Image 1: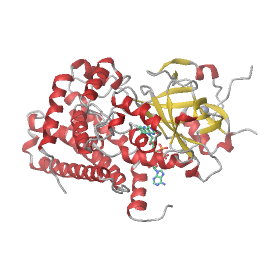
Image 2: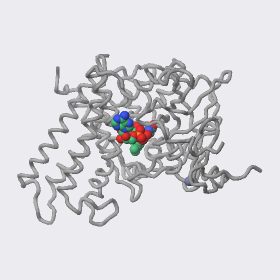
Image 3: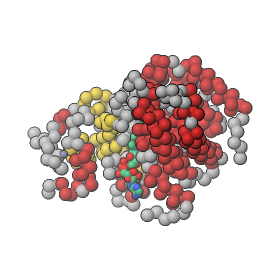
Image 4: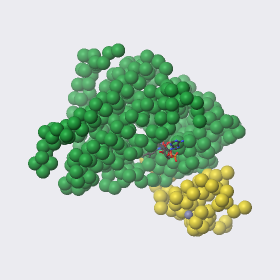
Length: 400
Length: 69
Ligand SMILES: Cc1cc2nc3c(=O)[nH]c(=O)nc-3n(C[C@H](O)[C@H](O)[C@H](O)COP(=O)(O)OP(=O)(O)OC[C@H]3O[C@@H](n4cnc5c(N)ncnc54)[C@H](O)[C@@H]3O)c2cc1C
Ligand SMILES: [Zn+2]
């Protein structure tokens, strides 16, 4: 067990920090803050190309698909530094882990280099109006018709559907099979005829959250599929095995820097702020009670970090990754709720002013984080569902 | 011309054309619709139209209560 980064890894971190200082211009920040385009703005896309050229995206992926066959920890360091600047590189939801594990050779060639270059991104089409926590109850239908599938149904909370190139869709291919065994996954271009997107506005809708907010997206979507015809080659993994492919992909997608940073960036931000700022002449950094609360928060943040490190080392060594990601997905979001509540108590009414208010602290990021914290307990697998997975896979209890 | 659909829960008439009208496109070419023109759901092989998400949720919890035979 090794808890320190190597000198080479520390050097990589400095290199990434330098790149960010030199390349993340105000124009790029403006594009990233525009929730309509996010990572798809023209300047941002140029920057992603440069990041890719340095070999910093998909470091741990095989070389034949544009990766470096390198270490996951290196990848983690790159992701961590970019995430601190509010920039996601190859993080959760990229779809890549599932494609690497279950994709055909053609699919790997088609998608992985494009994901690395920032040209391909997936929206996650799992949840439906009546299938969220109970995802196996999903109704969206895909019917085989010769070399094609015809898809009808709808998805709820497809978060990136308005700026993704593709959707990673879970649909029912065998309605007569037991619930978990009649589901398949499809990788579908968003411009396929018959796909319609209806905006849903989130808790962050107005005013828009500043960059650096955890879960700052003001928009998610409903996505309708009406006689959508796709070639059978869109199927990821075998037909009717989609439940297992999807669960494995979700689990792997939870591992890594973005999960950890989601947990602790708020802690870092408030500690830095308290060190440098007073509220109406009051120096919170000298108040023993508030220092206690910050220390508690920090200790919990380090637990999140260790959980992430453990998950990554299991994945890195091809170990058996069962309940660990789920445990992390309980502790970290709930840490986020506790943290943002603590911060709200500390900052008082000024801390509640949102982006755009003249007196808002740090453009309202702490207030927006408070709202975003509640999203992380639900999205990407709710904490209740995650607890159930810990009970089953970690504690060996039966499925109920 | 078939009549405009009715929200099966509160019986409001939904303007199907508005509910389906394309208001724009996403960045990568999917059609977008007006979020204020109602929503829909594919159920038992048919599209049902609803005035709001609340009505749809009520419907999907107990569809048979609302489907007229
Ligand atoms: C901001 C946001 C973004 C999202 N983005 C995406 C996305 O991109 N793609 C996607 O597919 N989905 C996405 N989701 C959907 C998310 O995964 C679901 O909301 C989640 O799985 C819960 O499902 P549900 O909303 O249907 O709630 P329900 O299933 O109705 O559950 C409601 C609450 O009850 C709890 N609950 C349900 N059953 C049990 C039980 N048996 N025991 C204990 N507690 C239970 C749940 O944990 C939840 O807290 C997003 C959600 C949010 C809020
Ligand atoms: Zn209604």
